[in-house]
Image 1 (cartoon, rainbow, N blue to C red):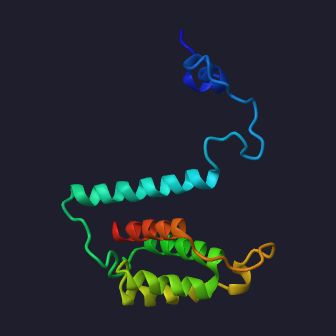
Image 2 (spheres, rainbow, N blue to C red; image 1 turned 180 degrees about the horizontal axis):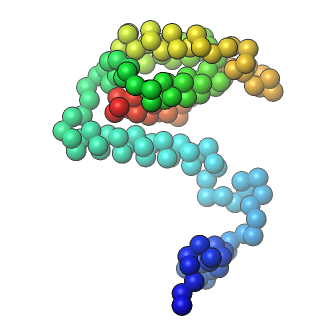
Image 3 (cartoon, one colour; image 1 turned 90 degrees about the vertical axis):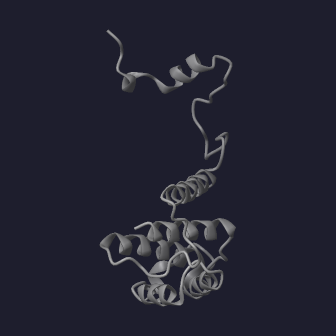
Length: 159
């Protein structure tokens, strides 16, 4: 009778798969990991973007700019919008989030109407509660943050 796969010891499976591989017993503070957890997350976001693009392409409907001309009228839309805005506001603050939304409109990712709708959603956030008191202040958004925003836009466009 074979052992159920859930009962195998992961370290033992790794040793069986590659006897020459050295696997540390415990990773200390991410040391020795193949990539930092944030980087792994960014890769999964980019993978999601490629997957969404492939779905659009397979359906013969690659979107043209603006990618998002209106917010879908569904409950799931609000969940995605609040998650996206929470990320932007916590990372960059209210003013920089507003600037990022303006930038997304300028580059043709969203329309003016979507930007205005997103600004309305921002009113639901309390600026005081949004900031981590241990951080010195809002940070600028980097390229990876904008890629994540594009993932959120693609999610909304695919609803």
